[in-house]
Amino acid sequence: MSGLNQSGEHADGSSHLEVLSGWKDVANYLGKGVRTVQRYERQLGLPVRRPSSKAKGLVLATKGELDQWVLSCKVAEPLEKVRKHAIDVDLQVRELQQRVVRMKQLCDEAVRLRAEWRASRDKFYHNIQLVIPALNGQIQSDAKSPQKVSLRVVRTRTGLSKTG
Image 1 (cartoon, rainbow, N blue to C red):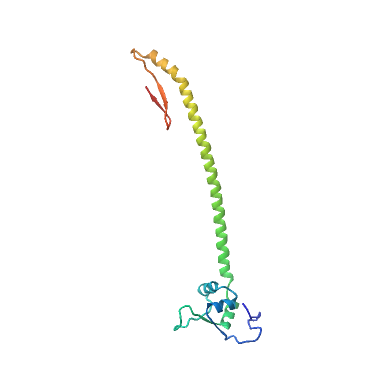
Image 2 (cartoon, one colour):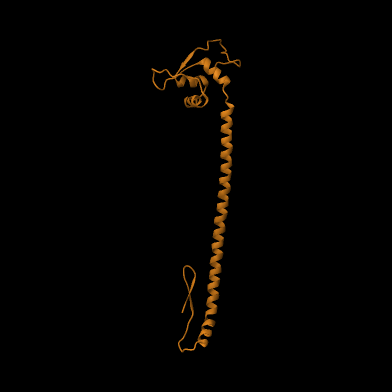
């Protein structure tokens, strides 16, 4: 904000009734951007007037009213809301990072378990292949009919199946 001393008066002693017209002039006087000043009007009640017969975007403000608004404005409340929101966002980001780490751990564990399952399945298939000749001999000696009975294990995509 330009031209004010700590007591709220202009350093050069000029009148507080000087009128600013337009968002650009108000923004320059407050040392802010046009969009920031427009947001101040919406959210913080910046004192500007809109002449009813003029264009929709035209605003008027007096330096005195703007100076008083700046001195009395509770800027701490909006800043506290921003800080609280930033803290909430930080917590959400940390939680998301933890969940991503856990997801990676679960994916690694799934890969490990899948490999263990495949190894166990292959070992089981191998052991079955070792037992089949003995079972075929037992079945043939127990069979009362002269036909040959054979047991065969076939490896399928989903596991093992028995035929025969």
